[in-house]
Image (tube, rainbow, N blue to C red; front, side):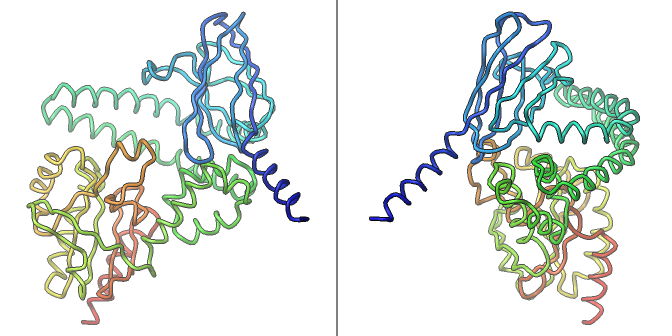
Length: 400
């Protein structure tokens, strides 16, 4: 009989966690009437959307929330929102919060009552000196990128598109040093604030570029309550996937139809060293690295070395085939990764996506698999550089 009250108490605790809510009391200067909109992610990855009517520029929005998350506050309905519509990124918590915003300057909105928002404000102050230099280059890049997208849609000639791509690449190079500075600031913040939700937010987008040791250390420092947030759960998935695509793990065995319509299975290559090259036709660094891969293939193919290209061109197979032909890399096998954007957008599992099994988030990334099916090297996102890859290949084939 003594167990019954304990069970009831446990049930109440669980219900209490599920029943937590947030409330935002806000004011929007420059918009006395109409509606405001808020979208945010729940702890299980589900999307929540809500709206509130403005009365003399004031509104109140409440909703369920079991832990901190990121939301987007808008003055236009998300269903009708264009890419240029303004919004404010808010760090929401199960608490009473106050928002002050101004139409035309939502990026300067102030949210009080959220510890995570206060932490983000501190981080933004650290970013400011870098953004002074980065912003004009970034704005120019975004404008040029719109021109490139418009050129593609208008099916402009290849020379025009190539010229725009070259300009974009030049701007990327100019932005690189400033982005490195921002990365260093973020890393220092994460290291110094392991219990802040802002650190979890930053890690969600950085984890794919970390090596396995760094990723596991970051996860181990994270408090349990932050692990249970939607972002925390996504990080756990990323760490597990990165582990599956790092040295010491058994390589995921996949079977696909190759570029020529023939069945290809990784299991057919047992006994050989296989370099899986994750790339795409639209990836400049991937294409620039193909001549070097061709050189390595010619050097080691007679010693038991194979390459399998896994392309991120599921939505544009013709561009994939054209790139293979143009770069002369049809000398090794090629398959598509198996990306299903509809499933990804709906947060549904996609067992056909090879990249998910290897924790691939940036291109190019290369995975070297040994004759026994074990991963012996990772090069690119979350791994070593190409010099290390060359050294490893020279090492293993030098012994033969």
